[in-house]
Structure formats: C-alpha cells, structure tokens
Length: 116
Image 1: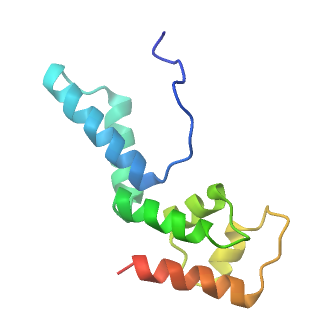
Image 2 (image 1 turned 180 degrees about the vertical axis):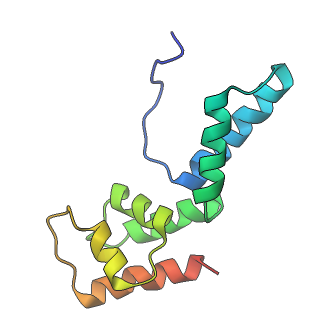
C-alpha cells in the first residue's frame, strides 16, 4: 500500500474533514514539523467550517430524510448553511429537480435549527 491508496471513499462535510485533519495534525506534531500543504489545508478548513463535525453530520442526516435531497446535496447544504431561498436554488441548480417554495422552506427551517 502506498500513501495515495484509497482505503475508503465517502462524502464528508467540511467540519468533519477539519476534525479528521486535526487528529492527523496532532499525531504529526509529535513526530515532526507539519508540511506546508497540511498547514494551508488546516487554515482553509478552519475558515470555512461553521459547525462541529457531529452537528454537521446530524444536519446532513436530517436533510437527507427529505425525499428530494441526496447525500451529496445534503453535504453541500451543511457546508454552506444557506439563509435564503436563492441560496438553496443555487445548490440545486445542476439537479434535475425544481423545488417548490415549501420544499425550499423545509430545507431552510432545518438549517436554521443548526445555525444557532
């Protein structure tokens, strides 16, 4: 097995990626200095992460329970935390579904619970 072998593939939120990288950073700090890419990635994730990994996963699972939302879209919603209907429409722009105002509001209501 080489460094670049994929052991597992699954979609994760930015918050979950941040928590995973934080654990790796702690291990690497013990054995030596962090490489440039790791530091830049950590800064990027710290900047964009808005929820804890646990809360972002709960949000994804709750949004996935809506029949018109798949996991990939739910993760985008959890990463972006839209505030207004137009932001939700942009997330669904490439999908082959046109959401009703009620469906958009259902998404916004779920997101609002996690933004506090």
